[in-house]
Image (cartoon, rainbow, N blue to C red; front, side):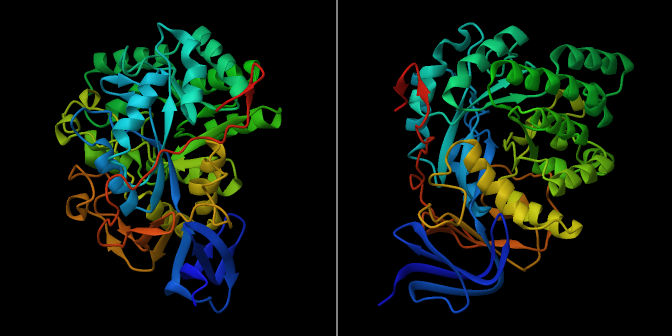
Length: 461
């Protein structure tokens, strides 16, 4: 009689080591055993040779609802399943529904649950007019972190949170144990540089980087981390395109503060002088894509252990919002859920960066960051059997032909991927097979942090 429901044998990639000829055994939707050698019997037993077996990725930064009637969870989680991302953490800046109250959190859970093909957690934020008053109710509603911005894209949907209000929000979050994540661009500096670029008459691909030079990021990072230091709140920068930014965070950690930085996959893949020049608005992202030298610096930061998470900042804008010849007139952001894992594996192998960082930065650390590590983030007995398998088969990524995204464009079109996602499992059930997504809408679940913190003498429920 089979001892397990599922056994996968191959090269098992863990945060601390790579296990050649290892296996992962699953029972009742949970990881049951990790081993080496002859794999045990199972109802489904797959001997995968040289294939890489990793924990399912947790994408820490997804925007499923930034554009009404566009992507939604039905497509974002389909892209996720195809790419081996088994949990997404969705941002609170939804067009028409800023997630800034318990009621808004519930609306979003109710909206996403029938659509989701993978598990999902949620960020919360605040309405600047209300301040931090609703932070506790959102914690009780199940948000996994909070998101703010030092730059205002839109006064309602994506507002700037000025320093005094940011301080008040951090102070309110600190007792909960959750993290305050912040978009790191100094509002005044960006607007000043943007006006200078407009006055110069430059509108091509160069305009975006010129309007957001490195100082605009670095000034904001000091504000964010100093606010965390002053309030005792874990402070997190949700994306940084500059090696210097990771050094700033390391200095705060050295001084005893919780200060972390996330690196998006586009900053580890694309560069300004080749990709932005070629793609124009389809490579417009805030903060901007930087020169190739900075890309290589960021890989060194990965190898040094100074990157905390790797994510996508995924958003699938319709093509008409990304093709204006005036670079600054385009929407900011790109899709990436379908290719984050194979892009990271490709980049790491090309630079001799250990693959253990893939398991750590895209699974273990995100699970810890959002306090989901009681069920997610590792191939550890007792945790959800969320698994991604990559086989050594070269493919050329083309968004239009994959069928797993709502838009037919991607800044990663044409990139050769030496390792391809061939299977993904959510709680032990296969959700993708390398050719198509098998998960039905509604198979994903809302996941929330383990309630272990105390506020005003009461345990959070």
